[in-house]
Length: 263
Image (tube, rainbow, N blue to C red; front, side, top):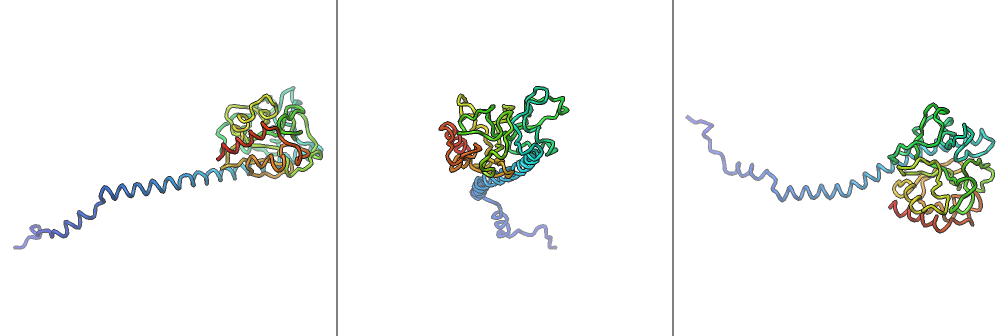
């Protein structure tokens, strides 16, 4: 009687099954292709993520710009100072001055900035312990000083500047990004004194959004720009004579170093 269990398997069937497996060379080729694709695509994905962070940061700065414009309207066309000493002789950073117009502390943090360092020198009792992170800082010298920039800056420390004194509101920087993790300052005072090391100060402060940083201008718009574009052909750091006011060589070197570090 015929028993199907005793059926002899065809050699061709066995050979077919043996040929269905991958060889070591084939596996290595597949792994190499995947590695090449990953090396190509990962930087693309990283740039796409950073572009998304830049867009979120730009949205934050646009809200801050709106708050500054509302503050200016309420205070007779005077820009907010970099800080205000009117609260119990405490230096209140500009963040707190415009916060009532924004109603949120989250907009003061750039998603690229990993620091949660709060604005310093503020009387906590006056603000119920509210702290504001620092991702953005004012274009301000200390008092009337503006070393390096080449002229007067718009948000000088403790001094409210009338917006009417600005020659060109659309090209005057008010607020700049920062990305350091060890400072609680609220203005770019690291750049206002010739004794400072310009390249170290600015190079570590400007946030790198795929080669650009976001800026708020005195007319209320926010824009991403390369650092070098802020000094030429116009000197956007000063309030007057932007065509002729030239930053110091240290300032220009710092700008160049910052942009080179962003590539």
